[in-house]
Length: 456
Ligand SMILES: Cc1cc2nc3c(=O)[nH]c(=O)nc-3n(C[C@H](O)[C@H](O)[C@H](O)COP(=O)(O)OP(=O)(O)OC[C@H]3O[C@@H](n4cnc5c(N)ncnc54)[C@H](O)[C@@H]3O)c2cc1C
View (cartoon, helix red, strand yellow):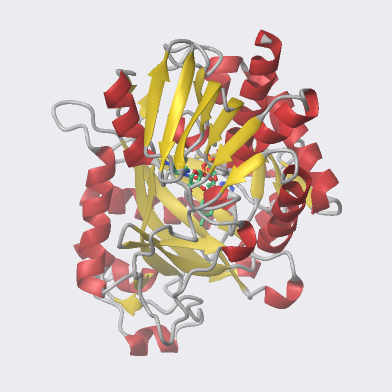
């Protein structure tokens, strides 16, 4: 065997699996294969001047490379079983929480010390939310911020690089099941191992589907989340963000009884566009460094849709909606809430006259021509509900950017150890469909590393 353990993907799932393996069993030979680049070489060529749109690099620096999809993220590690994935369904809530706390400790000891841990425990805001038909989900959130998140990743890499063999710009093309072992095929050759951990995230979703099809691992379709990103003056949400940083609030619509939820809240942040396979959607960031902060807060309002029979392609549905917005706006569309309610498109003039200056250059337009009525009605209802706990949310000048889409990988059939029907083949992180967050993906990596060591 070339390796005792091969890890495919060096996002949080792969990194924390490698970290825990070397801590517990430094004698194990571990190889990590990564489609993307080292952290310091990850650079998106879009500079807004010479290169304005995606040029489809062989490996997307935003989504791929050491640190995975989360490398340039806001670095919000939510310690909770209420959202961020279903890891607890496999390993139990208590264990999942302990693992997320363990990951938090590693982050602190690798550059994250001094960052703030926010918590919903003992907050009176929970009651305020309930009084207005909103539910505040329980969580503690460590906010590293984009800058410190990067430092933590640098430090983890510095510690791992001499103990683990990293193969960057080396996507695994095929995974072969041998008798009691595995072989990974890459352009640089084939490598064998007794245990294989697959942690390929969102960017590896198509490849993961192929692997499951090839070797007969059952899968199930997952949901897609569709909605908008809201941007408003930071003061309006400061009572929530100062105490909790990120609040996950859920609302059940009167009309359709759909659940609309807040997602990825960025106090004093910026709205950014995101390019997934040529489809431009919207997202948000915020920085720990006060010099990079803005006077606005942004967050997403999302509605989940899950298709199963006869149409199964939830992600395809989300992609089509995003494509429609790209067709009408050439990218992300921005609209004032007041214009949306009056049934008219926003224009550059109307936005310039408003009190909120967009932090993302987006095309003014009409989101009602893009989003399905049921989803848009839910979002509007929720904005009015949020107005009850954060007066001003439903102001005319509140900006809505569309569309925001959260894609999920299909769910791979796994046992309680996150192991497939093949002994020693583990699938973890977002690529498994079990997790969809930094903390859950990282925790799943630690969990399987411990399981591998226990199996001996
Ligand atoms: C802009 C943005 C902001 C985010 N912000 C947050 C946040 O604040 N908090 C939060 O909890 N979550 C956030 N997320 C989500 C979070 O980043 C993911 O949930 C997390 O990174 C999943 O970790 P992972 O290890 O499962 O997969 P990934 O991080 O996606 O890593 C998978 C890795 O596998 C590699 N790979 C894929 N296919 C192959 C192959 N065939 N061979 C070799 N390598 C392969 C990829 O190149 C990638 O580097 C954000 C995501 C984005 C895109």
